[in-house]
Image (cartoon, rainbow, N blue to C red; front, side):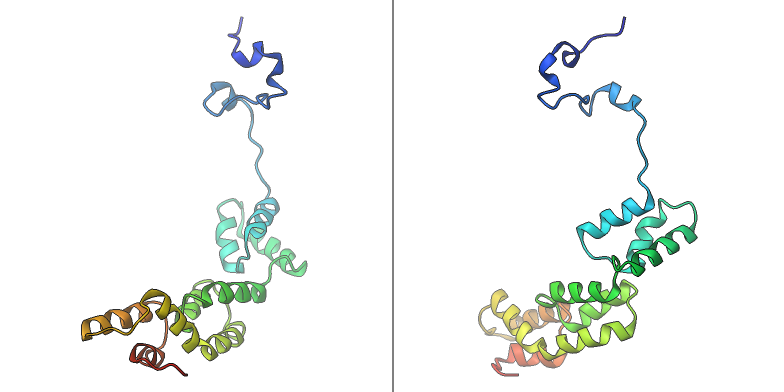
Length: 179
């Protein structure tokens, strides 16, 4: 006779939400696992955040039998406007724009496989506000101009690492208050 567990003996286990065995219970491994379809996986990824086509293809390729399956699914998602490169560019530039310069955002868009014609309008807007964003970031981080050359170099490296242009960095660290 099989061993009974506390769950089998407790009639209120179903009401307590303990109908399924706990993760460390060996009976849990006996149930067959359902495999998610590619569409379900893609919709799950897109429900969490926007993805570029290249990024979503990379994530889904591990679960597809053929590369053509992934391509056809991505085409279908784009036709239904569930996957949009333009929307991805807009979301990425808005979220990264506060903390990073146009060069850093451009590099990230390129890494995601975004075409240049989709990048240009978003990067143009970032270039227009780069001084203001760099100054706000510099004020939050440092608050005041450095008193020595080593301090200025540290501030300049910080802004350069964030992808701001050298011209903007010189203005911000030099104490300019207007673009």
